[in-house]
Length: 248
Image 1: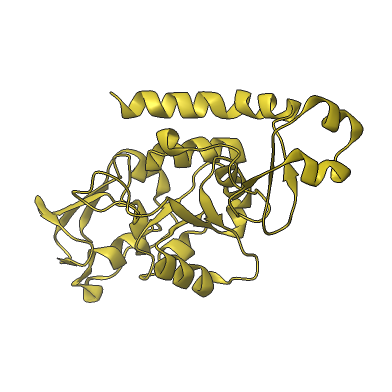
Image 2: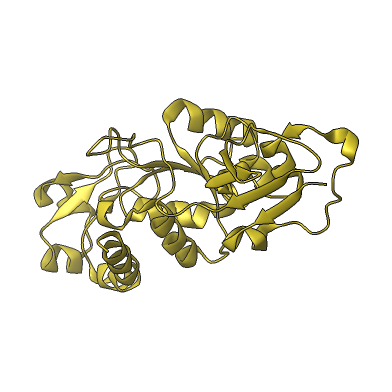
């Protein structure tokens, strides 16, 4: 069995219940070997075989040494290519149903995030590939699929902690535009004149608020009410820490 060293946070992901492949299973691709031990290829930021920088498809022999390192944020993503000063497209994600909570919070921050309970694993990966989306999931088997070029194994279980994790991993803090996207439909909100929605507003809302937006898809009405301050109290520290880190 190769001497495989999982550095830093990768060591926590190692599935100790797995049995090492026999000698006859070698040579084999580094990707296959690492995933046999429970770690999706999406979590590997850098790989060395016998001290030489290698790719995930590099062949590994039974007596080799493999060093695997996690990503250094920001992780690779499809919406900005090397050498570009600005993203070619907006940050875009597809969230598995097991992380739907963080999917909604990403929409709250203004990020295009697909959540479709009707999609199976194949459907998720195909849509991610076709639409240049990052796959977010806690399902390791989903992220092991070869077609997943960009993905993140979400470690936390609580949605707000997951949000902090994703914002940090992808350097999203300074790109966020809170309250610009419908949390239900993922559609960008558009301004609407108060007079056009007056008949749909509660008396106190009509009295105290004048600026409104609507979702073109579901026609829900949005305004910066008292709930906005409570939400900002939660997202504020996440975004502030991220922007601070990004400028260091």
